[in-house]
Length: 187
Image (cartoon, rainbow, N blue to C red; front, top):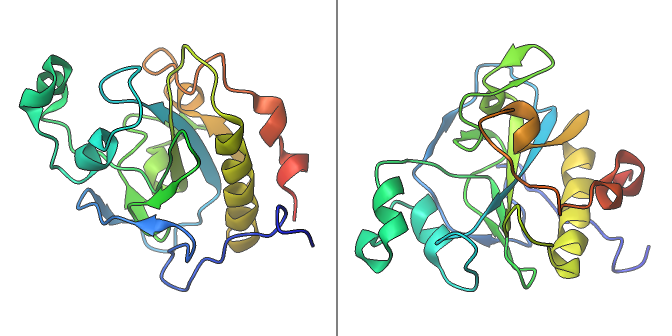
Protein backbone atom coordinates (compact mmCIF):
# COMPACT_ATOMS: atom_id res chain seq x y z
CA UNK A 1 0.00 0.00 0.00
CA UNK A 2 1.51 3.36 -0.98
CA UNK A 3 1.87 6.07 1.64
CA UNK A 4 -0.79 8.13 -0.15
CA UNK A 5 -3.32 5.30 0.29
CA UNK A 6 -2.52 4.60 3.93
CA UNK A 7 -5.29 5.39 6.34
CA UNK A 8 -5.20 7.26 9.62
CA UNK A 9 -5.38 5.19 12.79
CA UNK A 10 -8.39 5.86 15.02
CA UNK A 11 -7.86 4.84 18.63
CA UNK A 12 -10.41 3.21 20.94
CA UNK A 13 -11.40 6.63 22.27
CA UNK A 14 -12.42 7.87 18.82
CA UNK A 15 -9.39 10.07 18.12
CA UNK A 16 -7.13 10.02 15.08
CA UNK A 17 -3.54 9.54 16.11
CA UNK A 18 -2.45 11.63 13.09
CA UNK A 19 -4.63 14.70 13.74
CA UNK A 20 -3.72 17.70 15.84
CA UNK A 21 -6.05 17.56 18.83
CA UNK A 22 -7.74 20.69 20.14
CA UNK A 23 -10.47 19.93 22.67
CA UNK A 24 -13.80 21.65 22.14
CA UNK A 25 -16.27 21.88 25.03
CA UNK A 26 -19.13 21.91 22.50
CA UNK A 27 -20.21 18.28 22.42
CA UNK A 28 -22.25 15.76 24.36
CA UNK A 29 -22.98 12.03 24.34
CA UNK A 30 -24.61 10.29 21.43
CA UNK A 31 -27.85 8.43 22.17
CA UNK A 32 -27.22 5.01 23.67
CA UNK A 33 -26.29 2.34 21.08
CA UNK A 34 -26.32 4.91 18.26
CA UNK A 35 -24.61 3.73 15.06
CA UNK A 36 -22.38 6.24 13.28
CA UNK A 37 -23.49 5.96 9.66
CA UNK A 38 -23.26 9.42 8.10
CA UNK A 39 -20.51 11.92 7.31
CA UNK A 40 -21.46 15.55 6.75
CA UNK A 41 -19.09 17.81 4.82
CA UNK A 42 -19.15 21.49 5.79
CA UNK A 43 -17.22 24.60 4.89
CA UNK A 44 -16.21 27.40 7.20
CA UNK A 45 -14.09 30.52 7.14
CA UNK A 46 -13.86 33.22 9.77
CA UNK A 47 -14.40 35.95 8.93
CA UNK A 48 -16.23 34.80 5.80
CA UNK A 49 -13.89 34.08 2.87
CA UNK A 50 -10.73 34.79 4.92
CA UNK A 51 -8.21 32.01 5.54
CA UNK A 52 -4.96 31.28 7.30
CA UNK A 53 -5.80 32.33 10.84
CA UNK A 54 -6.87 30.57 14.04
CA UNK A 55 -10.38 32.00 14.23
CA UNK A 56 -12.10 28.68 13.45
CA UNK A 57 -10.20 26.93 16.23
CA UNK A 58 -11.05 29.81 18.58
CA UNK A 59 -14.73 29.63 17.57
CA UNK A 60 -14.97 25.88 18.20
CA UNK A 61 -13.35 26.30 21.63
CA UNK A 62 -15.44 29.34 22.66
CA UNK A 63 -12.36 31.60 22.65
CA UNK A 64 -13.17 33.80 19.66
CA UNK A 65 -12.32 37.44 20.35
CA UNK A 66 -15.45 39.16 19.09
CA UNK A 67 -13.74 42.56 18.77
CA UNK A 68 -11.36 41.25 16.07
CA UNK A 69 -13.99 41.50 13.30
CA UNK A 70 -17.57 42.88 13.07
CA UNK A 71 -18.87 39.51 11.81
CA UNK A 72 -17.84 37.83 15.06
CA UNK A 73 -20.47 39.82 16.97
CA UNK A 74 -23.14 38.05 14.89
CA UNK A 75 -21.95 34.59 15.95
CA UNK A 76 -20.79 35.26 19.51
CA UNK A 77 -23.78 33.44 21.04
CA UNK A 78 -23.24 30.21 19.06
CA UNK A 79 -21.75 27.10 20.64
CA UNK A 80 -20.68 24.85 17.79
CA UNK A 81 -18.01 22.33 16.94
CA UNK A 82 -17.14 19.69 14.43
CA UNK A 83 -15.25 16.46 14.75
CA UNK A 84 -12.64 17.51 12.19
CA UNK A 85 -11.29 20.56 10.39
CA UNK A 86 -9.09 20.40 7.30
CA UNK A 87 -7.27 23.70 6.84
CA UNK A 88 -6.38 25.16 3.42
CA UNK A 89 -2.82 23.80 3.58
CA UNK A 90 -3.97 20.31 4.62
CA UNK A 91 -3.55 20.47 8.38
CA UNK A 92 -6.00 18.07 10.04
CA UNK A 93 -7.43 19.05 13.43
CA UNK A 94 -9.79 17.02 15.61
CA UNK A 95 -11.99 18.80 18.16
CA UNK A 96 -14.35 16.05 19.34
CA UNK A 97 -14.04 12.28 19.65
CA UNK A 98 -15.89 10.38 16.93
CA UNK A 99 -17.68 8.57 19.75
CA UNK A 100 -19.25 11.84 20.94
CA UNK A 101 -21.85 14.08 19.34
CA UNK A 102 -20.29 17.27 17.95
CA UNK A 103 -22.60 20.22 17.41
CA UNK A 104 -22.20 20.79 13.66
CA UNK A 105 -25.39 20.05 11.74
CA UNK A 106 -28.00 21.88 13.80
CA UNK A 107 -31.57 21.36 12.66
CA UNK A 108 -31.14 18.54 10.17
CA UNK A 109 -32.64 15.40 8.65
CA UNK A 110 -31.32 12.55 6.51
CA UNK A 111 -33.44 9.70 5.13
CA UNK A 112 -36.37 10.83 7.32
CA UNK A 113 -34.30 10.73 10.53
CA UNK A 114 -33.96 14.04 12.36
CA UNK A 115 -31.01 15.42 14.36
CA UNK A 116 -28.15 14.17 12.22
CA UNK A 117 -25.63 15.06 14.94
CA UNK A 118 -26.79 11.87 16.69
CA UNK A 119 -25.45 9.56 13.98
CA UNK A 120 -22.96 11.58 11.98
CA UNK A 121 -19.38 12.77 11.94
CA UNK A 122 -18.86 16.39 10.90
CA UNK A 123 -15.90 17.39 8.75
CA UNK A 124 -15.27 21.08 8.15
CA UNK A 125 -13.14 22.28 5.27
CA UNK A 126 -11.58 25.70 5.67
CA UNK A 127 -13.17 27.34 2.70
CA UNK A 128 -16.24 28.92 1.30
CA UNK A 129 -19.15 27.85 -0.83
CA UNK A 130 -18.11 30.47 -3.41
CA UNK A 131 -14.58 29.26 -4.25
CA UNK A 132 -12.62 26.09 -4.99
CA UNK A 133 -11.02 23.98 -2.31
CA UNK A 134 -7.32 23.12 -2.35
CA UNK A 135 -6.05 19.80 -3.79
CA UNK A 136 -4.31 19.01 -0.49
CA UNK A 137 -7.65 19.33 1.31
CA UNK A 138 -9.16 16.66 -0.94
CA UNK A 139 -6.15 14.38 -0.39
CA UNK A 140 -6.50 14.64 3.39
CA UNK A 141 -10.28 14.31 3.16
CA UNK A 142 -10.03 11.08 1.14
CA UNK A 143 -7.62 9.55 3.68
CA UNK A 144 -9.92 10.64 6.50
CA UNK A 145 -12.99 9.20 4.77
CA UNK A 146 -11.21 5.89 4.19
CA UNK A 147 -10.19 5.76 7.83
CA UNK A 148 -13.67 6.56 9.11
CA UNK A 149 -15.31 4.07 6.77
CA UNK A 150 -12.98 1.31 7.96
CA UNK A 151 -13.79 2.06 11.61
CA UNK A 152 -17.53 2.88 11.39
CA UNK A 153 -20.42 1.59 9.21
CA UNK A 154 -20.64 4.76 7.09
CA UNK A 155 -23.34 4.49 4.43
CA UNK A 156 -23.52 8.09 3.17
CA UNK A 157 -21.33 11.15 2.73
CA UNK A 158 -23.36 14.32 2.20
CA UNK A 159 -23.08 18.07 2.38
CA UNK A 160 -24.52 20.28 5.09
CA UNK A 161 -26.87 21.56 2.39
CA UNK A 162 -28.24 18.01 1.97
CA UNK A 163 -29.28 17.62 5.61
CA UNK A 164 -30.37 21.24 6.09
CA UNK A 165 -31.76 22.28 2.69
CA UNK A 166 -32.80 25.90 2.43
CA UNK A 167 -30.93 26.70 5.63
CA UNK A 168 -27.35 25.84 4.62
CA UNK A 169 -25.49 25.93 1.29
CA UNK A 170 -22.13 24.41 2.24
CA UNK A 171 -19.89 22.95 1.07
CA UNK A 172 -21.17 24.75 -2.04
CA UNK A 173 -21.08 24.37 -5.79
CA UNK A 174 -17.28 24.45 -5.96
CA UNK A 175 -16.93 21.27 -3.90
CA UNK A 176 -15.98 18.42 -6.26
CA UNK A 177 -18.16 15.49 -5.21
CA UNK A 178 -16.68 13.23 -7.92
CA UNK A 179 -13.37 13.18 -6.04
CA UNK A 180 -14.92 11.72 -2.90
CA UNK A 181 -17.56 9.36 -4.27
CA UNK A 182 -17.97 6.09 -2.38
CA UNK A 183 -15.78 4.13 -4.81
CA UNK A 184 -12.85 6.48 -4.24
CA UNK A 185 -12.74 5.85 -0.52
CA UNK A 186 -13.45 2.14 -0.39
CA UNK A 187 -10.79 0.35 1.63
